[in-house]
Image (spheres, rainbow, N blue to C red):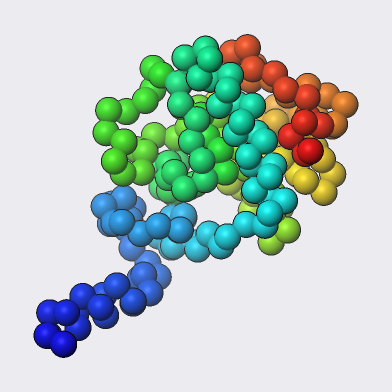
Length: 188
């Protein structure tokens, strides 16, 4: 093996650095991590149930957004700069007016709508911190889907938080205009 080949193999198998700057992270090609306050947070694979719920919300939201040409809907591997963080919501919506021209790297803007599906391994207060980080960075609405209780928390601000149950209808309000879906459908 040539020395150059050995260096390439070593670089590919080395774990990513524990700390880096936001700029370094945005320029890197690291996948499977969120960036929070200088640290890389690994994003482990999710469960089948989590995937089913994410697929449901993606299908309903994507169908509406596409039919009405409102913007784009993104899945979990898409990174968004949220203040001094780079987060990967389970589902995100960006309106046509805000879509950046360069979409080859993580978005330099927060999404208009961020959707997080709570996993069994999530710590609820961290999910809530993430919801508030989105809002503080300019995200207009956050939906947090809680599979155990089959509820959706709708965050608009720290003082405007609603809980929707399976008997309620989730709407896009003024963020994804015209969107509505029965909460129960998200958990089927």
